[in-house]
Image 1 (cartoon, protein in one colour):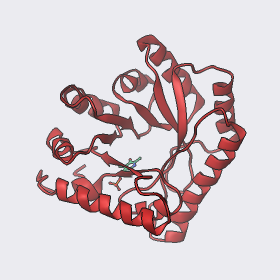
Image 2 (cartoon, helix red, strand yellow; image 1 turned 90 degrees about the vertical axis):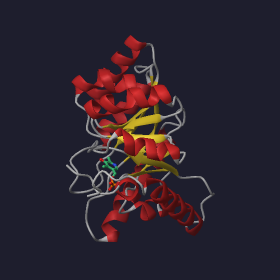
Image 3 (cartoon, rainbow, N blue to C red; image 1 turned 30 degrees about the vertical axis):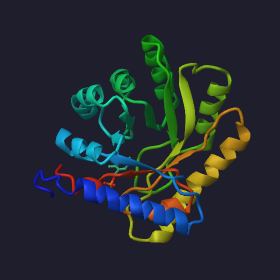
Image 4 (tube, rainbow, N blue to C red; image 1 turned 135 degrees about the vertical axis):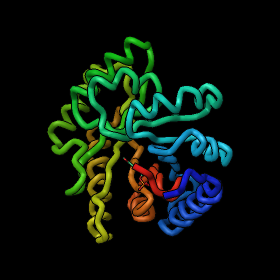
Length: 239
Ligand SMILES: *Cc1c(COP(=O)(O)O)cnc(C)c1O
C-alpha cells in the first residue's frame, strides 16, 4: 500500500515511459507508437493531479461511479484530459459513462452498443469504443465468440451506430506467471484484430489496448498500441 503518499508518481511515470520506449525499440517499432494510459482506479484526485503535473493526460477508470466522482472537476480544470472506461459496464451505467468518457474500451456485447448509441444520440455526442475480447482463462469479461463480434461489426457496417466510432480491440491477459500463456493471449487479440480489419476495411480498427503493469513489455512486443498501467504508476491499490 502507498499510505496515501503519491510523491513518487512523477518518478514512476518517467520510469514507465522509459521502459515503454525501450520495449518499442527492442521490438523494432517506431518511437511513440505505444500510448500510455494511467489507470487511476481506487486512487484519489491528488494522485491524478500528481500525474497531470508530469504531463499525463490519458487516464483509465473501471467504475462509472468512481469516475464520475473524480473526473468532472479534474476535466473542468484540465480540458485536455482524456478518460477511458476500462471496466465491465452495466447497461444502466452507460448514461453517465458516455457523459464523461472519450472512449469505452470494455464493450463486450451488442446490447451495450445499442445503449451507448441511444445515450450518445440523446447527448448529440460521438464516442469511441474498443471491442474487448476474451483471450485468457481467468478473466470473465469480453466477447467470447467471433460470431457475436462479427455481428457487432455488421451492425456498424449497416449504419446502426451513427454516434459510435469503432477504433480497435482490448484484452486482459490472464494473471499467471507463465509468460507464454500471457503472450498467447496478446497474439490471439492481434490475430483477431487483423482478421476483422481485413474484413471491415471501411473502419480504422488499429488500436490494440493490451498490457498492464505486469505484462506490458510482452504486450508491446506483440503489437500493443496502448498500455493500461495502474500499479507501476500509483502503487498498490488499497481495496
Ligand atoms: C486495473 C486495470 C488495469 C491496470 O492494472 P495494473 O496491474 O495495476 O497496471 C488495466 N486494465 C484494466 C482493464 C484494469 O482493470
